[in-house]
Structures are given as C-alpha cells and as structure tokens.
Amino acid sequence: MRIDLHTHSSASDGTDTPGDLVREAAAAGLDVVALTDHDAMSGWDEAQQAADEAGITLVPGLEISTRFHHRGVHLLGYLPDPTHPPLVRELDRILEGRTARTPAIVAALRGHGIDISEDDVRRESGGSVAAGRPHVADALVRRGVVADRTEAFATLLSPGQPGYVNRYASALEEMIPLVAAAGGVTVLAHPWGRGSRSVLDAGALAALKDLGLAGIEVDHQDHSPVDRAELRALARDLDLVVTGSSDHHGLGKVDHDLGVNTTDPEQYERLLSLVRP
Ligand code: AMP
Ligand code: ZN
Ligand code: FE
Ligand code: FE
Image (cartoon, rainbow, N blue to C red; front, side, top):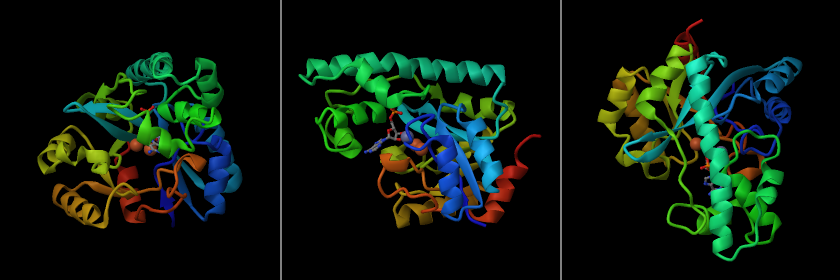
C-alpha cells in the first residue's frame, strides 16, 4: 500500500486539475491519495469521480492557514463534514483574506516599479477560490519579471520583501477543535519546515494533542533526516500519528513528486480510526 496524504490541485495553488492529480497519483502507483488544497474543499467532487474511475482511494482533506505564536502554521484536516457551518464560516473568512490580499500585493509590486495587474493574477488563479502568492508568482513569470516561482518567493513575495502582504489566518488552538467538531482529524503539516521549530517544540505539541491534534507530518521534503528522526521520537513519546507525503503542487514546486514520501499503512489506519463517522 502506497499512501500520500498531502497534495494540491488547481483548486488552490497546484497546477493539475483535481481529476488529473488523481489520475497521476494512480499512474505513480499510489493506492491512497489525499487532496489537501489550501483552505478549500472545492476540488473534492472532481477528485472523487476520478478516484472511482481509477480504482484508488481518495481521502478528502484540506490544508488550513492558521497562526500560532505569531507564526503561520499549516494544519491538515482530513474528512471533515464540508457543510459544517462553523467550519465553512471560518474558511470563508480565510478565503476573503486571500481575495483581499491580491490587490494589495499588486499595488505593492507596482509601487516597486513592476508592471503587473490584478487581471494578470486572476488569469493564473483561474478556477481557484484560494488565490495565493504562487499565482502572483506565475503572473510575474509570464511577465518575464522572474524565471520561476522559486525566484519570485526568493526575491519579491516573502516577508520583508517588496511584494509581501500579510493576511488573515485562524488561531491554531481554535482550528484543531473546530475540525474535530466537523467530524474530521487534524495533522500538523511540515511542523519544522520554514523555521517553525522554535514554536512547535515538545511542550507545544503536547498541548496541541490535548486540544485534539491526531498527528504530525514527519516525512516531508522541508525536513532534514535529523528533523525526521527527532520528530518521529517526539511522536512516539506523545502517541501522535506519524504521516509522510509529497506536498505535490504539480509543476509549481520542484522536488515534490507524488509519492516522494509516503505514510505507513498502520499509521494511516490509526488516523482513520480517529475520524468520527
Ligand atoms: P500563500 O498561501 O498565498 O501565502 O502562499 C504560500 C504558499 O506558497 C505555500 O503554501 C506554498 O505552497 C507556496 N510556496 C512557498 N514558498 C514557495 C517557493 N519557494 N516556491 C514555490 N512555492 C512556494
Ligand atoms: Zn501551496
Ligand atoms: Fe504547507
Ligand atoms: Fe501543502
């Protein structure tokens, strides 16, 4: 059984449609794939249809933008009721923050002398409800300002750079119980990626587990072999589920091919056992 529990489609900032993503997962030899678009569940139906046709299992999920001790933390939610009103309301608030940020980023870049418009970005974000910096990056690539998304994030779109604008994110301590109230389970995405190790230490992980956190993503491309070993030991001490995944974004992120990291079947079963029917 090959299981990949974190991928993105064009419902957020991946470059494959949800259907294509699932077909690629099947072609890559995966038996189980989770679709976890940023703050959005709009790709689920198309992905489910493709999974039924391809004969693989889809785990409907999402990757939620949260805040913890002033840092952005990504929370994976699996199998929540997509109609649970309090969850829908909170996700709408995040999505509104994304929508409002785009013109602010465009204005900031224009102020920096870069010729880019909101229409340019809309063309890239297309059918996505979750407009993001990767779409701005794609617009900058098309304008010839940068070579690829990596250069856009390295030079213009990260904190402290000319095109960076903050946006709303939910409190992590509130989102974990909210996903649980919607019948789902939560896993911290790449907890020690991009400098979050300082806030997500053993004490914090124990407190988050008490709030209902089910697991942590250990095998992720943002984690070094040493990080992975330490996180695995922490998960064992705290009795947290351990997952592994690609965080695939289609052509949008290099070195994140489907199945590059996978989740142990026993850990997957444990995670599913925590989902409320
Ligand atoms: P946003 O959610 O709009 O704030 O943008 C953050 C997203 O951009 C992350 O979730 C990643 O998917 C993506 N991202 C961050 N850094 C990079 C990078 N260096 N190259 C490509 N994509 C990135
Ligand atoms: Zn992304
Ligand atoms: Fe993430
Ligand atoms: Fe992700």
